Picture 1 (cartoon, one colour):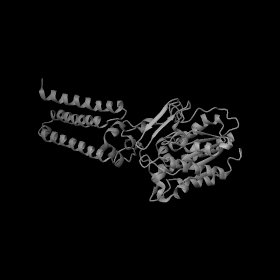
Picture 2 (picture 1 turned 90 degrees about the horizontal axis):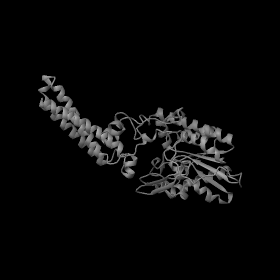
Picture 3 (picture 1 turned 30 degrees about the vertical axis):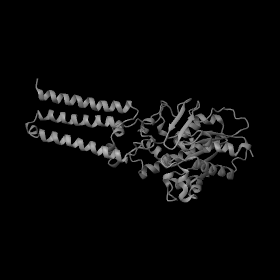
Picture 4 (picture 1 turned 180 degrees about the vertical axis):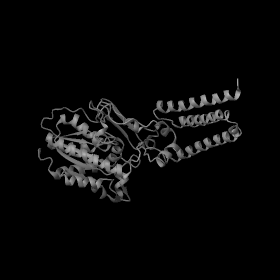
Length: 403
């Protein structure tokens, strides 16, 4: 047996096993301890490259003369790549949101592929997310909402349906401290019942499908739809109403290379800088073209909400919600499309409130209304946000049916 060929074959086999092992560990470890598959990946790639090069050298005398030099450079290159990845990893500059919060990579792209048209929690479960700043624990009802069980018959109650993302769900605070539940306390004498249909990560397109197909059965008198900057980013990746497929599924498959992105921080940097992917693995999400398109889709969703609420005999209030990153030194920079959405709502005579107006009044102290790391509202922030919405509802006379 030719010993060089045997050594080359062993290197190729080990390289394949290491890369395959990295892929398996990333996908089976629930994205924990990703530095381990990263070692497998880099070492496996080094062995594969070296093995293929040695195989080619056996067929070319000219390359064979450079074998020692190229193999040495290959090993040096992969050592440099490992060190570069380690430095980037230690600095934390390429950490995702979930890694900053709890230390583990979370695949946003994987959760985008749904087996239904509805962005909901698993029904009849318990959510328990521990963060450095809070513990978010909530019971999920049979609909998949962070809400108590709801009876379709409302009797004489005035029902307010709040629908939006995690800022409506109330991530970061207890059930009764969510702004949605403040309505019941504030208007107790008016027999108000609030329904929290907020789901972290949702957007106005998923929210309309939820309202149309599941929530109209509860006959809300008032629908409060919240919109913020993350909705633009979500829609940039998910698209509009074309995300709903005829087979009852929704969304897109995650990119096949995500496992490499999850484990290797240098690869992340390259994908962001050279190919313009964002942490949600959406390409060119922040381009003006995609952002303008996202604004148009949100306007389309609002139009559908208005048409259906009118048909159902309900009122609609749209809330433009501020995020922590929009404030710097007490000054507020509206999120992309905020002014455009406000103009659209004015032109279409749709009730709305820009909650950033009240938060701007807090000046440099506005940060105390948010969790510094997580960036969701804290208890104080939800209270201010809820008060802003309640005052607008009272100002517009939307409680006239029960006063």
